[in-house]
Amino acid sequence: MEISAMPGGPARLYALHLHLRPVQNGTLMPFSGELVHGAFLRWLQAAAPDIAAWLHEGNKRRLFTCSSLGFPRVAGRKLEIERRNIHLPLDPHETYLVRLTLLLGDLFPLFHEALTKFDISHLGTDTPPFLQLGKQLFLLEEVITTNDDSHGWTGFTSLSSLVEQARQVKCKREEILTLDFVSLTAFSRAEGKAGYGSHAFMLPLPQFVFQNLARRWQDIAPPELAGIVQMERLEHYLQEDGVIIVDYDLKAHHVHFTTHQQRGFLGSCTYQLRGHDESTSEDAPLTLRQQIHLLARLAFYTGVGYKTTMGLGQARLRT
Image 1 (spheres, rainbow, N blue to C red):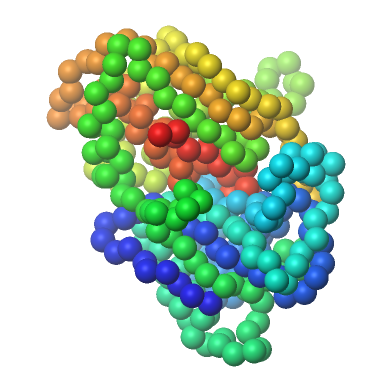
Image 2 (cartoon, rainbow, N blue to C red):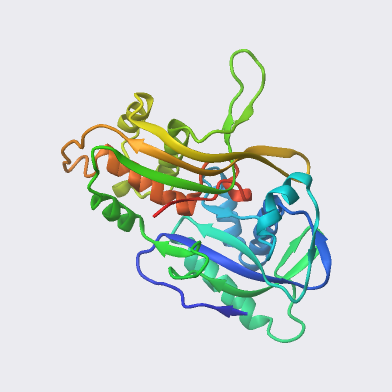
């Protein structure tokens, strides 16, 4: 296994690709985010129990995200395969990808140390499996966390860097931004007064997307940065249609978890940020529209919506 050059400094958000190779031929369900989530936590429990306990205790804060296992050469058939739950073959000569994000800076050096210990202590032909997904065993070949990977889904940054990027945005009168939702995305809606039960909301309405991201910011930002996103003002701006949808290319979709079917959507949505930029101040260093830009950039690491720790809600700002 190789571990690519790891960044130092004040970075707090990390997006990594884990390159995995199956031990033997077999098959696996096409959407495995639930399995990846469980397998990752089991590996951490064995390799670094302190990290596992930390993540478990912080589960409600969602301090990490996991993707489903990425299969090579199925892109054109991926949606049909997931809908029909056609189990896919695993080839020991192929490399498979899992994307992992860490949303608390202190997690990264601990995770890196656990990987290094795993690598050093298990060299040779008897290398034990790294993850077990269902009945299938995988070895870890490489970890990538650079900002220039060809897939465009790895990288690292700091929360202060995201704030500074947003501060540099000079919003036009009709400012627009586009989010790409590349894994099934949905929002969990609680049971209403009529008692019909909870359900998955399947449209990326601005108030759902950006309030969800604002809560993620509050979850992970230190006290000195938490107030950068002004929750009450932002909620009012969204409720008053300060952000509207002006274009979209969305598709309803569903995937299969081990016990149930999960519905949601995929595609892209373009939002217009309306109004004039107000003056900034020490108490409000970003305008409301700059705060929306900040949250749109945050989505790359935190995901959007429901069950982001199980492969749902991977999204990013289109640049």
